[in-house]
Structures are given as C-alpha cells and as structure tokens.
Image (cartoon, rainbow, N blue to C red; front, side):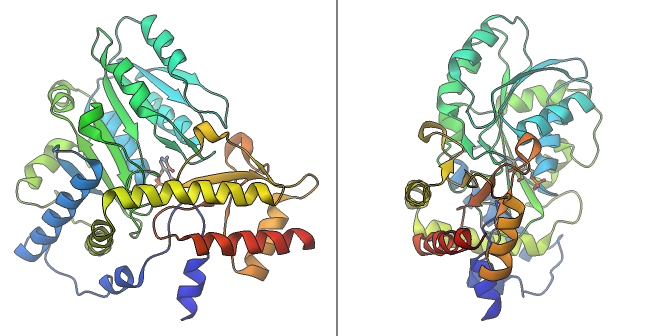
Length: 366
Ligand SMILES: Cc1ncc(COP(=O)(O)O)c(C=O)c1O
C-alpha cells in the first residue's frame, strides 16, 4: 500500500497521482502499433478526448511532452516572418513565445503582471492597433502562478479581427478538468498533455486542429519533421501515428478517460471548481496569503506566499520529509517566493484536508 500513500501526497502540477485502475492498465503487454488492437485503443482515446475537448476536430496524439505540443502549434500553421501576438502572464507564456522567436516568427509579446490574468480590454486595444496578425497565442491556465485566463472573453476579440488570425491555446494544465468548449469558442489549435488533469502518465501531447487552421497548415513553410501534422493526419486515417507511439501512455489515458467519462464531464469540471474554492478558503483560514485574486484563480493549481520570514524551500523540505507531501515551488521571477499546490485530476476534498493539516503542523515547526 506504500505507493498509494506516497502518490496520494503528490500535489505538484503534473505528473499527477494515478488511480489504481490506471496503474493496472500499465501492466498490459506490448502490442504492434501497426495492428488492429492498437488501432482500437487509439480510436477510443481520440473519441473520448474529443468529448472533453468538446470538438469534432481531429486530435493528434504525439509522443512527447506538453512543450512539444507548443512547438507543434508554432511550426505547423505559420511561415518565418509572420507576425503573431502572445498574451502572457507567466513562465509558460514566456516559454511559448520563446519557441515562436526560435522559429523566426515576428513575435509581439504583451506581458501581464505575474499573478494576474490576461485582460480582455488590453487584448482588444492591442489587436485594434495592428493590421496583419497571423496568430494569437494564449495560455489557458498559467501553471507558474495559478491563473486561469478567460478564453471565452478573448476568443470573440480574436475572431473579430479583420486579418482573421488563428487562435492557439495552451491548455496543458487545465483541459480535462476545466470547461473549454473548443468548437463553441472557435479555438483553432488546442493543446494538452497526458500527465495533468487527464490522470495519465507523462509522455503524450494531444493537439486538436480546426478546419481553418488546417487551411493555414497547407500554406505554412516552417521547417518541421517529427511534428509535421501532415504525417499525423495521414496516419490518423488508420488510427495510427507516423512513428512508434508511447503505447503504455495510451493504455493509461484510455483507462483514465473511461473513469472520467463515468464521472461525467460536467461533474469533473464542477469538482475542480469546488476543490479550488474549498482549498482557497482553507488556506485563508490558516492566515496564508494567496498569490492570485479570486477572479483569476485556477481550478487546477493554487499558489501561496509562505509566511514572512519562512524560506519556502525549507518549508517544502519539511513537508516532504516529515509529512510525505510534495508540492511545487515558484518559477521565473517567483522562484523562491511562492509555493504551488495542484488539485488536478485524481483529487478529493480529503486529499486537500491532508495538505491543510500538514501546512498547519509544519508551519509551527519552521
Ligand atoms: C501551461 C503549461 N504549458 C506547457 C507545459 C509544458 O509541459 P511539459 O512539461 O509536459 O513539456 C506545462 C507544464 O507544466 C504547463 O503547465
């Protein structure tokens, strides 16, 4: 039972703890990735992902981490020199814009203070001052700070721009746990990763592509090979991937999706919202300060300032050594200044009660 106990106390924003059914799915024997058994698993995973992405668009499964999904979005729909806008509010937005620069896009980055969300007034103003925009990039859930951006406010502003930019969204750390209806909102490229709210093992990024984005793919001249979606589309016709897929990650995702479907999409989304509200209110009761205001708070990760005079590293170390609780520190400018607790995927209120109890006791000690 030791491993269940340890896993239950892994509260970092991915990888997330696996449920027993998902763990056992990993003990399945390998199969040929060019055979019928594999195709069945692939098809089922894609169909169930579509239910949570709320889309009819194809979803491509790439054996790689979420960052590769971000690179896939950069290299498949643009040509070097295209002007694109990144609205960012933390480290993962910075990372995505860096990928854009690496591939010689003309990147306009509009930064929001860390801990606040992308504001639609600024999005509107920025876009209205620009003529030709090939794409607009937004991080749905900025894991570095615990901010959820309001894509339903941003999407219509992007869609209304006369140059018809693509809307590309990184929902690596929210999708599966948070409502983001791709087709209804008109998101063109939507990216997630297996090890987050999907409750599966790390190793797969899932990229959904709208028909409009596909048109742009046909004329994009960006260099690419492994991430070239033309190849993925060709193999998707047979429910396969161009190169060897991470078969065991697919097993785990298949099993996790089955459990998520049983719980029901709306129930999963509501559970995450409830967990966020519950955790934030318990943290406040301890007298701790939250980094993000209620209006921007993420349903999957919460960041907290340690009490004054307490070194967050020392605190996290005590939590790990004495209370078997693993949480994350800050990133970028917030490194050393905050701690982050994830509540994505396989999490219940009682798991968060354990976190709060460990906080209470450990703070007396540090
Ligand atoms: C919002 C966001 N984007 C991208 C990534 C990168 O994902 P990966 O670490 O799987 O490459 C992460 C990882 O935490 C993330 O939270």
